[in-house]
Image (cartoon, rainbow, N blue to C red):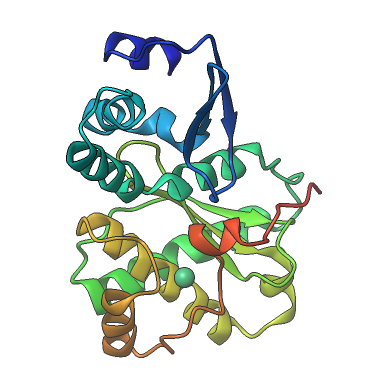
Length: 221
Ligand SMILES: [Zn+2]
């Protein structure tokens, strides 16, 4: 990211530190730039705004606009990807193949019933890590495509299949949001679609990026 920022005109910074808290996204002190690591995934337009925001010669009106553009970039989504990638898959267990096949079949059934078959096929993963969380979607960097749905092993072992169906459907609503280019969250489009497909519009089945940052930490298995 240093190289990109320099190419885009950043001057007077001798060191860059990446961080991941949301209190101050970008700051410079004694020639040290501290910047949220999510900006590594930002397009040039946003990084140009970072440069303009930091340059002392930028007029104040322009600086305010630059600041708005910088803050509008959804850094937290990209941090989640990093958390997601750090996760270790648990060891495959006996019966997993059959469970994964059942989940894939469920996805096809719900896809036909509620999404006119328009959602892409995608792999499932059984997570040994989730304790209270029931499901999760993994978004691909840059494209924000949902590439995987994870379901908690605890959930699969303890709860009725009917509950698992609700979890998968919940994650499929997120997949639908991503496919439609909508923000992947529990906002109005989620609520509306959840009601349409007959699941509760509450967020209690999973943890999405914004919540991840306000306290959720992945635990290693
Ligand atoms: Zn959700």
